[in-house]
Amino acid sequence: MEKAAQFDAAQLLDQTSIAIIALDCENTIRNVNTAAEKIMDRPRQHLLNTHLERVLPGHPVALDLISRASNLLMPCRFRVAQLSPAPDIHLLVSLTATPLMGENGQLEGTILEMEEVGSAEQLEEGRRLNETLDSLGSLALAVAHEVKNPLAGIRGAAQLLEMESTSETGTTCTELIRSEVDRISRLLDSLLGLAEDHPISQKNINIHEILDHVVRLCDTTGTTLNRDYDPSLPEISGDRDKLIQLFLNLISNASEAAGAEGQVRISSRISKQIRLTQGRRQQHIVVEVKDNGPGIPHELRKRIFLPFVTTKSNGTGLGLAISQKIVHDHDGQMALESRPGETAFRVFLPLKTMR
Image (tube, rainbow, N blue to C red; front, side):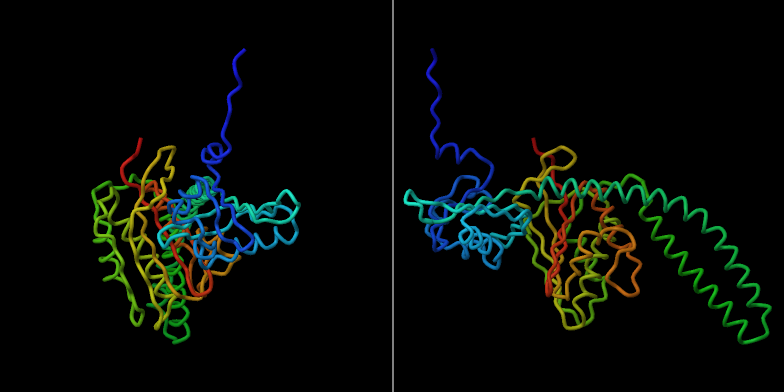
């Protein structure tokens, strides 16, 4: 009879993909597993004997969850929380705090579990959004072609009436008709941007050249614009014109949100997380456009990439939808993080495919 395998508890903890942090009653870290080292991007010796608040500065959700679990003496869970253990790491995680009871029945600390849910959930959310944009694009294509021809006829008729009109009122009315027809035509042209299904032009591109070109194009009068580039970034493969349109939308929006005395920061780096793109493991570059404007209202954040959703009183709500489509056409992903006083759009563009 074969001897049953023996498993060491510490080894089991180090094999799990869930980050586990053991804290004492003062919220000082006493033990961690390998997954915690990876998710926090710090070696074990730099985590031990450190207060949790120093490891996760500015994120009270974890401490609040631990306090609740300790007071209720029962596990408490927070389904999705955004954490940034380092300036260049942004995580979407589920948190579970479980009271750690001693043999005498007294509370000795807390076990904090963190499981990254960002990759799977964001991929699924991105897939659903892209399917919605594809459907809307097909609808836009059909509607635009059906409407543009009658609009051209209306505009032509208005021009004829204007030429024959002898009254100031008649001229004013025909000018109004032409102006509104032109506005609707521009809206339809924007809608057609969602319906474009042409293969993108794949060329080697220096992303910093793209960003600098866009900055020259943008009207950022009064806004302080800071650039923080990683000069070691390799070139990517993409469509120059499409990427210019993408970052022109994002930087213009950020400048408008920040206002005349606001600040916009454009940064680039290599993502430390490996993300799945169409079933392949890939490393990405990340371009972040951050402003210190009022932020996007909470009720709009999940819908902000859909057509006709906008925070502007005079906006069409198509710029971010088209931006999302451009990122999708480049096999990339786009993420949003917003709160009052800070909004950041992060564009993840793939480098070479990894095995």
